[in-house]
Image (cartoon, rainbow, N blue to C red; front, side, top):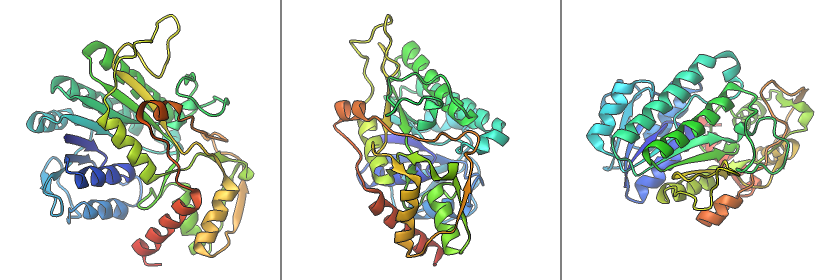
Length: 350
């Protein structure tokens, strides 16, 4: 396959690109390398993919020194002409859109970044797919779309009309936009609702990274909702396996779909939405214990109320993923945390 992967300097995009390259696919990577979090991590990921520079010119093509079938462009998704040029030149067969302005709490203070990257940028990807006969578009959604829904586990057939952050609203918007293009232009699209992804090369703004760093530096960690939180932590290798299976199996129209009783996870158009989660929520305090065990050091804790935009629990119903693609994530939290800590110590030399 010839696959455009956006967000290849990002956590999931980096791991996905590496997996696709190692199985022989051609990957056209795109990322704007913004400074939302420690840019050294992004440069480190790109170096793992065979790009040695730490100063990338926008819209210039870079060839990997490690993978002959990999090229990279530094581009903002909002740059419509640059996106159009890449699609026109390379004519990808498949696209996986993982680039986005991430973070729930950041969206409370920087809403414009989410509209530009997650809405305008995604529209540019949809238009590029439409005009270049792309066979399948897979794209990142998020478990945050479930918002105020309290029915557990979260099912792709649940209503998701009550987001509580602009980040979540932008991801729900992506699903609606994708359905429109599937319906109007017959483009197969699949949305992937990721549940709290963690593992080596993880994001520095996420709890595992923040907790590990603070504990090693002998600083207290902030434990929100007084520890009464549950998260469906999903290991990065499980996420990538799910994404690859989705890419390889383009969405098909659902012959059983009815407008009288519409299933929000499918359509009479080639459109699908899946949860990719472990399906086993972990108590926040148990998660912290796993980090303490891997580090061999106890955490000092600041017990705090829940933050705006946060939900107390997430739990993925992966029935649809199992039914359609024969896959269910299952990496134990202890193993995943241990792998992250090993990577963290090596990367930062601590």
